[in-house]
Amino acid sequence: MHMRTMNGNTHITISGAGLAMRFNGALIFKNIGFEAATGKCVAITGPNGSGKSTLMEIAALLLRPTAGEVACRENGADVSSSDMIRKMGFLSPRVNCYGELTGFENIRYAARSRGVSDVAAMERMRSFGLYRHGRKRVKHYSSGMRQRLKIIIAVLHNPPVLMFDEPSMNLDAAGKALLYEYIESVRAGKAIVIATNEPEEIALAQEAVRLG
Image (tube, rainbow, N blue to C red):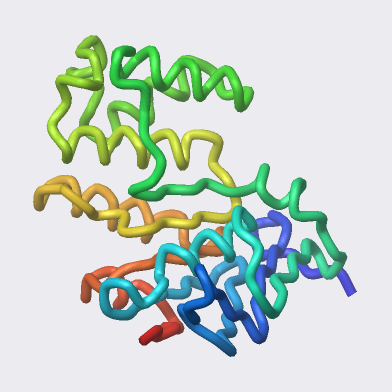
């Protein structure tokens, strides 16, 4: 049976079962499971070094686990990893923008590669309070401004799946408020996974996966 959300968008499920990961023979985590679906937010929590970012990359289909599997379904049908990745917005401390380019140039490059109009891209800049800094080179941005830019790029194409690793890192109170307002405004129509130890972000989730 095909499943659709009430607003007519497709229903996506990403689930992991029996997940384990080893690096250089050391076991990072084992027997971990999760399920994120349209309208559901899952938080990945745990102490530093417990594997939150690693599990996030596995959930985002960017890293293969040592054991277990991640399954993706859309409207009840299996979806390939490559197709699902195109439906994701991925935010991570490991992903950076081009420092020699301006904010506008970074955004336009991302927009054109994803079929997003310049008008829509500039509106994203405004909604996250970064438009007035758009002509500055990103290497001159503060850490919080760079984080806002990375968030904008992750959500630019309005993806149905959001994978956010420490999304409020370096954000001030105003930046956090904009981030949480955005998540609240879209959560009914998206599958969301957030790797975090921030209480405000854990509170956004209906389910938490604890590592360590």
